[in-house]
Length: 271
Ligand SMILES: C[S@@+](CC[C@H](N)C(=O)[O-])C[C@H]1O[C@@H](n2cnc3c(N)ncnc32)[C@H](O)[C@@H]1O
Image (cartoon, rainbow, N blue to C red; front, top):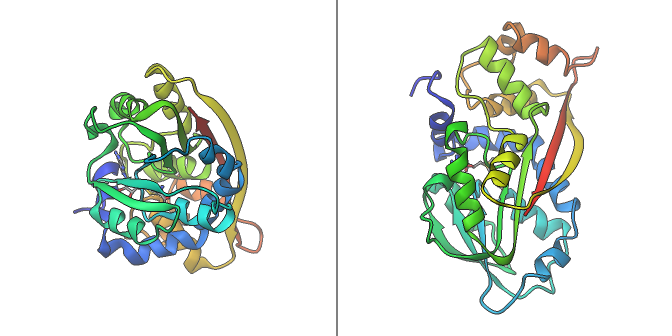
């Protein structure tokens, strides 16, 4: 597939065994996204309030399981009863990766190899449904259908959570600059768009904003991270820095010594 393939297709191509090294380079910095989420709420209390015999959780766009991994590390889930943990992702590579990282109280359940927008409306009712840094490559034109499916999957009294970066946050701002300066593509979907779509789907949505920075002085780490941010490992860091628009954006992320720092602003959307 050419580097100019559109966003959703490049996402699916890169969430694969062939993309493993690039994924691991990305998480040298992006693991922090999930630590921030794990520390942003009282997860044992939130989850404990939904726990009941036979309860189920749906992880939408499960990726490689970094969020449950962070919860297991930073939140004390020891008092929770086992919960059946269903994994949804169009990438079977992602599902296998996430599944391999589940540990009690998360008990591996069904594998749903579909996009959120293609989740059958009768897929079931879950006590907990979450999507963490998950919906960027979802085409904006398909967001309304995806939001309907997300809301429909939450059982009465259940908890829905979406964590997504805002339009001004690094992932979105970087990709806008990449599209303008390297090659055009469908933009990433922002937290604001997801929030509005969930409300249009009838959900009562409360938002919580978190901000933090990630960074590195290592150009190899910065290059791997940024290539994954664009799902494009054909463009070097030097080429990105020399590109129109993108070069300006990256100059704003660099200090006088060349160290990179990326600004993140994330909405936690509570349903
Ligand atoms: C950054 S990862 C999500 C990270 C994950 N929440 C975690 O805890 O590690 C993004 C995932 O979204 C999936 N994805 C892309 N488009 C999707 C869609 N329309 N519906 C559901 N999943 C999608 C990708 O295949 C990829 O596995």
